Amino acid sequence: MRTLALIAGLLVACGSDRRDSQLPTNANDEGCDDKHARRCVDLGIKYAQGEGVPKDDAKGLAFSQRGCDAGDQLGCINVALFYELGRGVPVDAPRAARLYKTACEGDEPRGCYYLGHMHQDGYGVRKDEALAVQLYVRGCLRGSREACRSLAMEYAEGDVVEQDMQKAIALYQGACDAGDHPACVNLGVAYQRGNVVPKDAARAASLYRSACDAGHALGCTNLAELYFQGKGVELDEAKGQALTDRGCRVLVPKSPACQ
Image (cartoon, rainbow, N blue to C red; front, side, top):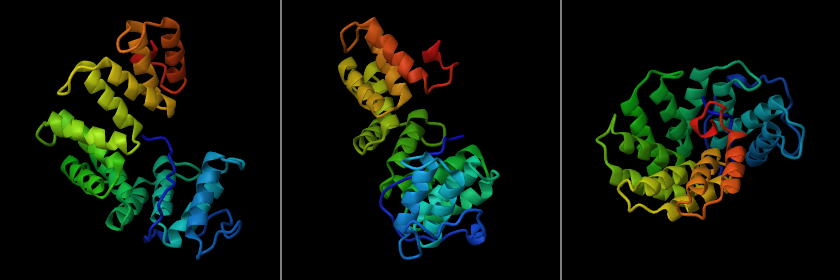
C-alpha cells in the first residue's frame, strides 16, 4: 500500500463524491471557499503534511474535500488517498477508486495512474492487469510521469504486454526527465547492469545521486553500493555507509540493502 503522498500542482475541473460533505472539521475558513478551490487543496496538503501548521488529518481531508467539491480534480485525488490509506477515516478503497476514476475521466492523468494500480492489485476494484496497463497508457499520454514509469515497468517485466526493454528505457528516461525519481533509479539500474543501454556506472551514479538528493531511499542505497565497489565513483566506504544509513532510515529494516 502506498504511503500518503498528497499532490500539489496544476488544478483543473472535476466532479466529486459528495457523500463526504458532513466532515468533522469546518473547511470554510482560511480563504477556502467555493470560488477558491486551489486554496482549499493547498490547505489540505499543508495540514496533511504538517507544513507550517500542526499536522491534522481531519483538516487535511476536509480542505481537500472542499476543493474537490469546488471542482478541483487534485483535491478529488487527495481525498481518494485519504480513503485508500485510512488516514483519519476508515479505509474505503471502493470510494477511493470512484474518485480516481472521476479524475481520470476528467482531465487529471494521475487519477489514471492511481486507478491503474488499484486494478493491478485488485484493491477496491476487480483485479484486471490488462485494464491497468490501458490506464497507464492513458495517463502517460496525457502527461503523468508516474503512469509512464508504471508503463515502463510493464514493458520491462513482460507479464501483461510483450516485453520490450527499448520501450521501457525510453519511458523511464522520459519520466526521469520529468522529475520522477523512482524512474531515475530504475534507469540507473539499467545503466549499472548494461541492460539494453551501454554499461555506464558513472551515469548510474549520477541518476542515483539525483534521486537520493530528492529523498528517494533506493537512490541512496544503490549509490552506496557503487561507493563500496568503487564503480563509477571513487571507492569510499565511509560515504557508502553514510548513504546506506540515510536510505535505511526510510526503507524497511529487512530490505536487502539494509542488511
